[in-house]
Length: 325
Image (cartoon, rainbow, N blue to C red; front, side, top):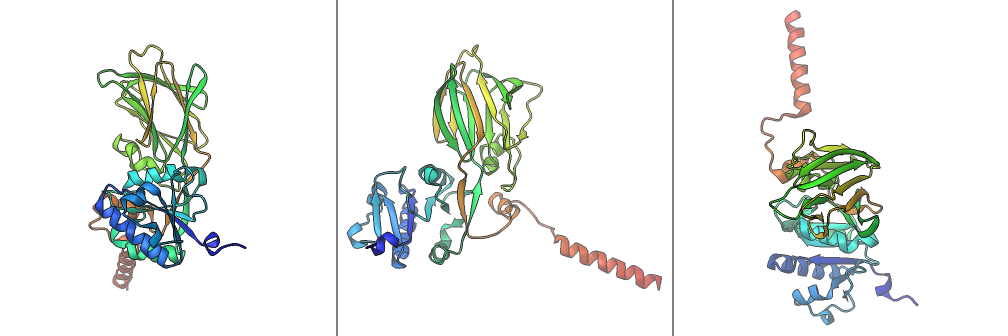
């Protein structure tokens, strides 16, 4: 016989438990979701930080010590924090492709869908499953040394190859689809997804790419070369960055600013479209343009919209007709 908890809906809750505000919001999610018959799964050490007594919620709270398998059987993951917390949640859920719903407690929070003051509405949307899931392109990243694979990971925002020593440039050759593109003495090279185009890519002078556009961005960092512009390539392209043998120092590969590996001279990094997308939960269907305006605080003063412009044209035409008569 199948028990009620085996058939119950499950939600993984992750929180930046170092912040008191995040702990308060996480407790609210646990209380409300379990009160609606949804099983909440927590990482054991986070449950300890939240001062939860699992026995008080049995059998509606499950604890796990395994981050890699934490989201198994969960319909979504609620992550409470800033973009860094959401990137961490993407790591935890990547193998299971569990959708991630970000509740923003950070500053910009481009990856987040809800703000902390919207907790009640967010919980209501989860309970009644009033949400959609949006797949976003990711990167698969591999590092080779002497033809041997030494490191493999993925990235939601970007993979960057950077110089390890501040006082030295990094000499690299960039290759696109098995053809050499250019050699640069630089601080590094950023390879970004459309999702990551508003992150490091944006700060480095790269283009903002709408999430619906499938493409990969390449941005040289302080390159000493005539041809060193940001580029956008096909999502099917394979980008390779070779750290030249003559480098007096080493480089470092960073993925989403969270995972890194040292790159000695001769290392080769290959970046391609990820086999698994990151799945983001959406509660609203607002256009990406509105998100840009809201998150960056862009000025749109004076905008009257297409409808106002059409009214003006009609009024002008009507006035012209009247004058003619």
